[in-house]
Image (tube, helix red, strand yellow):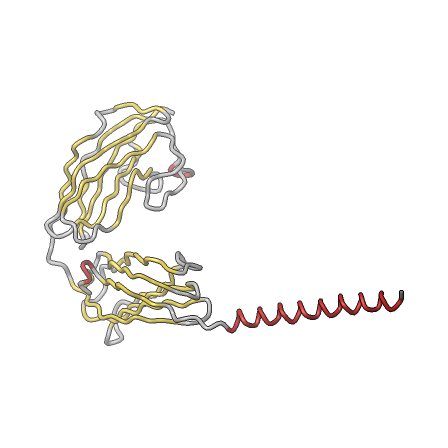
Length: 272
């Protein structure tokens, strides 16, 4: 009987040691797994991949990322070739933990940036410490295009039309530009605000229509909605929380070099 108990105890002890060794071995194997470095393809710098940025506007950057070891960081660095002038450095955390992603950002170029040739560095680091850097040449120029886009509104609320809670507010139309439409913002602005601000409710916002000289737009939001209609919806609260009163709708568009055009104001009333 004592021998049986002894054997059972030895059996449990041996099994526990085996599991411990197996677990340790698996953990070590996981740590030692070699994965391929991240890959970057389809790199675009500037509109139409022109490698040109316009001072006072923004720089379109897009790329496809694949990272078997999962993305830890995506960094963009820009500096002038001769070491002087504008510099930019930012790590983007939108893509952390993903195996693959489409990187698409617009980097503001300050109005006091110096013209000339710049170096552009795009670096992806994975969770295993592997790093891939793509380097491109970028030229900053002053645009000679001074023509703003045009806005044609085809459908809008009637003057001082009233909207109750849950009622859809709509406006639609057409945008065009001599070179390229850069983006659109359609906003509900309180009548006592003369400009788009933190108290504005965004009906729709798009940034960058690549290589498009004209496009239709349609913006809609329900009065009292919980979220706005930005590309990444934002909770409507705080400064821009809904309230009954007078508003106006404003359509704003801009081109690839920063020429801006505003529509007329379309006044409406909201009753919640």
